[in-house]
Amino acid sequence: MPDQGGLPKEAPEEADLPAVAASVKKVLRIEWDLEIIAVLSLILAGVIAFDGEGWLHYVPIGLGLPFVLFFPGYVLIAALFPKKDDLGGIERLALSFGLSIAVVPLIGLGLNYTPWGIRLTPILLSLIFFIIIMGCISFFRRDKLPPEERYCPTFQFEFPVWKEQPLFDRVLSIALIVAILFAVGSIFYVVSMPKVGEQFTEFYILGMNGKAEGYPRELAVGEEGEVIVGVVNHEYKQEKYYVEIKMDDLVLPKEGPIVLEHEEKWEKPLSFSYPEEYENLKVEFLLYREGDDQPYRSLHLWVIVK
Image 1 (cartoon, rainbow, N blue to C red):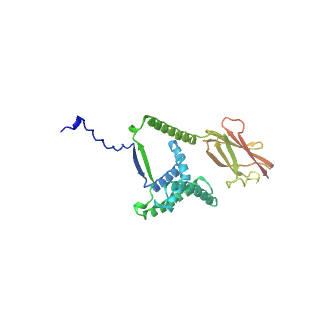
Image 2: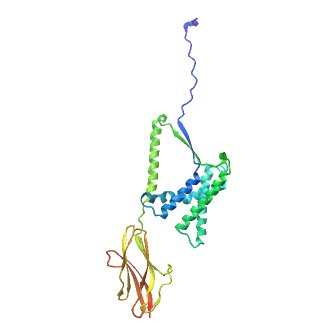
């Protein structure tokens, strides 16, 4: 029967539908973190050892900072705390930087009391050795734990569903990405481009022991004195040099041309002798650049010839 009054019934209200997710979550697990650090360290060492050119020139710039400021502390923390519940992600990150800043100077201090000293190659090899040893300890300690208890770097990413974002949010996201890319590019350009500072050439003489001592002071007539002459180019461009030895009125043939790129070094033992007795003979070492009539740099020794 029709309802009295002829009024239609109201349709039942529809249940609220769940809102469509506005973002997609992704989880990234890096299970080869120790191996990746070891490989990156070896790549850095190889590029430095073989003096990589072209795009390889930028590898030390990109890997050098994490190699010194992050990798040593990270592998040490991984060795000390292999369980994922031992430390949180933020604590591990902070301690990785902090311990790296502590470990690297200690390695340098130890090298200072060895015959190798604090130089690039010993520091590089020492850090690689430390990273590999700590990495092996970390690997074996993790391997003894159940898989679900092992620490593994995990990153969660939340990507917005692009079509469901308001127009203003999309424009803002694009502007933010462009700004980040511009900032990263600017930093990379500043770090990678050579900074033209003071332009000069380093010119020096050493004794035959490679130190600033042991120079020939007394020679017999006709006896050869010998020193190591060194030239280092800091001119920010390729240069051609000539070295001349002058003793009173006696001038020996020039050594050269010595072609050096920026920051390239040349060292060579050079000998001299004088044919007669001379009290306080001034032995001059003159450095010429190609095309110059006057010496660019000069050094001298006082020698007694008897």
